[in-house]
Amino acid sequence: MKAISYREYGGPEVLEYGERPEPKLGPDSVLVQVRAAAVNPVDVKARAGYLDGAMETVFPVIPGWDVAGIVVRPGAAVPEFAAGDEVMGYLREDFLSRGTFAEFVAAPVRTLARKPAGLSFEEAAGLPLTGLTAYQVLRALEIRSDDTVLVHAAAGGVGSMAVQLALHNGARVIGTASERNHDYLRGLGAEPVTYGEGLADRVRALAPLGVDAVFDTVGGDTLKLSANLLAPEGRLASIVDPGVKELGGRYVFVRPDALDLHVLGELADQGVITVHVDQVFPLEQAAEAHRLNAEGRTRGKIVVTVGP
Image (tube, rainbow, N blue to C red):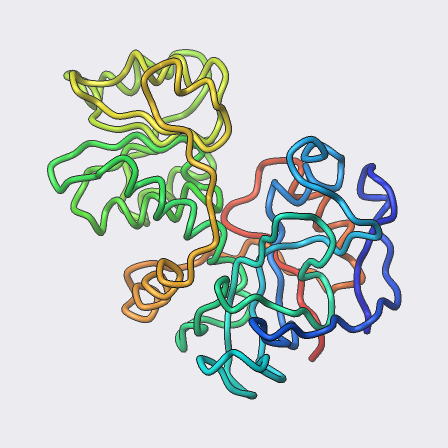
């Protein structure tokens, strides 16, 4: 099968397009013909070797955890799916090797849900990691209908999903973003503020008594500033900086969850959440997709398509 892979850590230049063996199918997995796979910041970090101390790496590595495609064959112990079913998934395993930037992938059933009928394959590929991250963090923050929530990098993949889900919970949402993304955030229903110097004053102007919860996607100084913007009994969570625990907050590392993904699929079918696909690249141009993602200025998702 055609796939993208890398044999050593490095920049986008280590990504190679070529032939790789078709994956073997275990009893608890399904063989999926990949139609689209999304690029995430973690893919760039994994390729560069930043996850080397946290996860075993088996070279050559096919990158990618997000996928949308069609079931070719279910494993012997999988009654949930049949050939021809359209699925999406967050296919993270406990090691790096068998990713989604390929024509076929063996997907553990615990990572899969049915693709929402109202989403294209490209949109569905952009939902699992970002959607699960936002959903699981907001659950950890115990967002209520009378909360004011501050979401950092709110126009990005995770941020835009967090905005939509928090609003669905009835919360008021303030989102940090560059000026060019303010209209996009207003369209989602958030109140945009520009990040950078003076951010604290801009947030306090909108929430003089403080915010009830902060969803941090930046870390460092932004995280520390965020802790000072909390109202009494306010809650803080970060997906990038474990130092949040020293500030009394929660560090959340997303995990595959078929039930959570099913809920997100239903919300997508109901039109509660949408996936904004910023740019699409064919599989053989995955290195360019990685380069663009690393710039950190993407609105929504960058997606790689596979096959027809």
